Image (cartoon, rainbow, N blue to C red):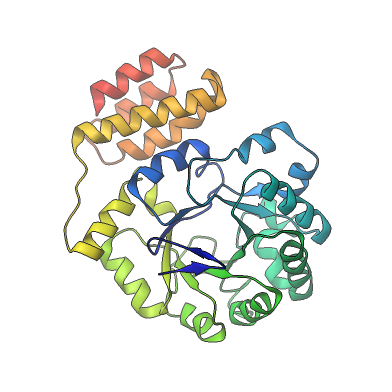
Length: 316
């Protein structure tokens, strides 16, 4: 059982923080399939401190037993202040993003760019840990590139500053999402620290889950892109892993889940934004199904919620 400070998780399967994906609406759906922990999408610390309305909406507390918010930034004092705001909004865990490889983020010296500046990274970790009374976790990659695989060193520094759990995506920043996630490398991080280590990257089925855990010796698994269009993946894996039973979602439940997810999106964002933000999810839900191209074309050219509801009911 994974322990994050004084918090005990019920399993070893976690939903990754994903920009534009793991919003309030998606987290409410994923939780139905019982992951141990779900993380918010990445929250920009400066926008949060400056009380940006859109950003404040992004930290809306979901109905999780344990509420985890991920923050990103490159200014220690701002990151600390953002962490306080998250705690005051009901967060039980703060996660620091040092793994995002996106150009817009790293060009602002945040995300995985922080792995190139260990002193700044350490200052940010210290500021966040010292600003809140709740556990702080860290997500990062192997390193910036193959010449600077400093995740084990940074993990040790982070542990000394008070970090309670570390997640490692098994690629460098320069790889982006190319190649394969190097689960075996994560074993080096596990050896370097005593706190729980989570393996992340390219885990989409039971074979990959077992291989990732075996090669990394990690304490748990974080699933990100593997949950696209499959929020029930957590139930599939937990049933197979703990009970050796294969879970298969019924057609009727799948349709109900998709309709509920759409309703969540409309209620949270309003009709126009809710429809547009949900299109990517419908693309993932319908992937590989017969006539999915025609379905997506209709969805992408429709701005009427009633028509979209009907299209979902007819297609799924």
